[in-house]
Every structure is written in structure tokens, then in C-alpha cells.
Length: 363
Image (cartoon, rainbow, N blue to C red; front, side, top):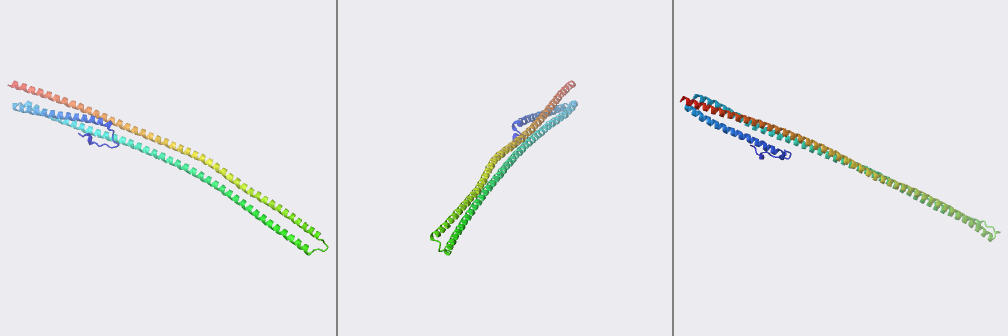
């Protein structure tokens, strides 16, 4: 008989707590069958010895009827011994085969169920990880695009403001230069005209004109020059004010443009925050959906594994029931063999009694 140490245990084999008691029970049944076989063999040997003694006794007494009867009984006993040995051997072989097939099939069912469960769980985990990665990439791309657009708009606004400021400074510088040039030109022209007047007065001086009249003429010329200078200064002041107003206008436009750019920047920042929140919410929704799908896959795999394990347990139970039924058949055959031996013993006793009676009557 095989011992428990003859079977190796693996990671995905049968559950010892469930299968070992059944195996032990089958072993006890096989031991009982072996014991029955041994008892039957011993009884056959004893019967053969007894028959040999009887044959010897009958041979010594010279009774042909007993000799014929002994030969018939011997043949029947040999036939019964062969029948019993064949039944026991066949029972052992069938029990071992059925047990091996049940263990193998049960292990295959359980291993297949566990493989399906592991595969489904792995697929669910991979799907969840893939969807989470896609959600993260989508969120990062959206945020990066929004930040790039905001930076481009702010940079464009700053460049436009700088350009307007540069243009305003250039215009102001040009106006100042033109004003200075105009003042210098008008001053030079006034000096030139004054010198020309002086030269004319000196060259064309009338001796009859008194000095007072000459002085009056000079004063008049000076007054005219002062008026011209005042007019020129007023014009220069007007141009300077216009230059300042134009410069302020350019600066105001630049500041307005910059303010618009900053307002757009704040708007984009608010939109970016809203977009980040929306992308985070979308990512969380995608992750939650992935978790739910993974949970469904795992639950389906768990149900499938439980069903296959239940089917395997039912199959093993059916096989074990078949083994029990077979063992009951063996017991019935054993009882039949025992009854056959009892009938042989009774026939032998009756035959021996008849032989003794005949012997006595002959005497």
C-alpha cells in the first residue's frame, strides 16, 4: 500500500484538509479488502489442507465416493479462491484508478480556476493602470498647453507695451530735437536780422537825423526783436506741450495695452485653474471608472473560480460516491463468497458424514 509520504504536495494541488480524510477512508476500505483477501486465502489454505487430510483418509479407507467428492470440492475451492483473488485485485485496481483520476481531475479543475482568476485579476490591474496613465497624460497635456498659451499671451503683451514705450520715447526725442533745432534756427535768424538792421542804420545814416531818433529806431528794433522772441518762445512752448501730450498719449496707450495684457493674463490664469480642476476631476472620474471595471473583472473572475472549484468538488463527491458504491459491491461479493464457502463447508461436512455412515454400515 502507498503511504502518505509517497504523494508530493504542490502549490496548486488539492486541499489536504478536504481530500486527505477521504483518501484515508479509501485506504481503510482497501486495507479491509486486503484483510478479507488474506482471510479468504487463509481459509482456502486451511480448506485445502483439510481436504488433503480427508483425501488421504479416504484414500486409506479406499472409498471411491469420497475421493470423487474431494476432487469436486477441491476444484470448487480453487475456483472460489481464484474468484476471490480476482475480485480483491480488481477492487484494489479500480479503487486506485478512481482515486488517482479523481485527484487529477480535481487538481486540474482547481488549477484552471485559479489560473483564470489570476489572469482576470492581472488584466483588470493592467487595465486600471493603463486608464490611470492615460488620464494623467491627458491632464498634463491640457495643463501644459494652457500654460504655454498664457505665457505666449503675456509675452506678446509685454512686447507690445515695450514697443509702444519705445515708439513714444522716439517720438518725444524727435520732437525735442526738432524744437531745439527750430529755436536755434529762429534765434540765429533774429540775430542775423538785427545785425543787418544795424548795418543798414550805420551805412545809410542821415546826418540830419538826431541821435535821439536813432536811439528810438534802435529801441523799436529791439522791441520788435523781443516780440519776435516772445512769439518764438510761445511757439516753442506750444510745440513742447504738444510733444509732451503726444508722449503721454503713447505712454497711455502702452500702459492700456499692458493693462489689457495683464487682464488677459489673469483671465488665462483663472481659466488655467478651472482647467486644472476640471482635468483633475476628469482624471479622478477615469480612475474611479478604471477601479470599478477592475473590481467587476475581479468579481467575475472570483465567481468563475468559485464555480469551477464547486464543480470540481461536486465531481470529486460524485467520484467518491462511485467509489463507495463500488466498495459496497465488493462487500456484497465478499458476502457472496463467504456464503459460497459456508455452503462448501456444509456440503463437505454432509459428504464426510455420509461417508462415515456408509463405512460403518459396510463393517
